[in-house]
Length: 270
Image 1 (cartoon, rainbow, N blue to C red):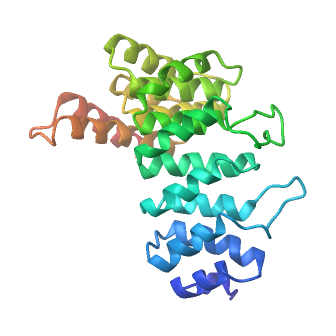
Image 2 (cartoon, rainbow, N blue to C red):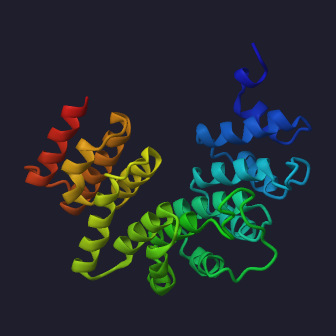
Image 3 (cartoon, rainbow, N blue to C red):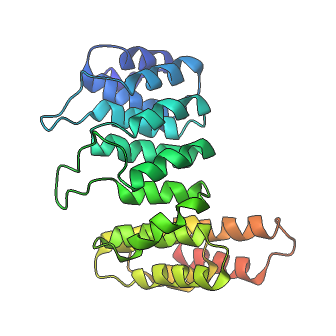
């Protein structure tokens, strides 16, 4: 049995601080996967955000990426300042992972820096190494701003509804749904994501499912259940709708008709 398969919290932290790059990568993933929130784990993951040893031929920092992803799962706000610094990393995918992590951590102090990067106002960054070589991870930045409630970002996000990449258009619709106070506009953004469920590209249908689940758009429930995608993903999206409805109704008893409809649809997919 390999050393990696016998990890404990202590050995994972030791591996993360060791010299074997493969074990370090796995340890960073493992600490996030198993939600290890001890102070030594957080400290080691934060230190890994400055790693210089694990480099790809294109200049990327794979260990930093894994560390950022892990920190996003651990709900420790000590990670916010170093993750904000990571938004200035040359590696496109480190910036993407840092933006996603900051969106999950929920600290509103991240909004300003996320917005600056969305506007491409932070110098020293490099574009994605493969086509279409985006200058920034726009979808991750937009989704983080939506999750954080950054209403001041609305003017910067709105133009992305017309971005050439459909996935970025979906991210913009998702965030604007979360940020707008106009019910009619919210419906337009939600319906736009429902229409995306009919896209011929499976990856884009999967993305739209995730977006609809994240915003809890109830009118999407029947379309979600009928989408040509894996039932597991449809169930996750429907669960997002149900959780949002239950939160809005304060877990009312009896359940609302909308909540019951979503549960029926979920049962049909099991």
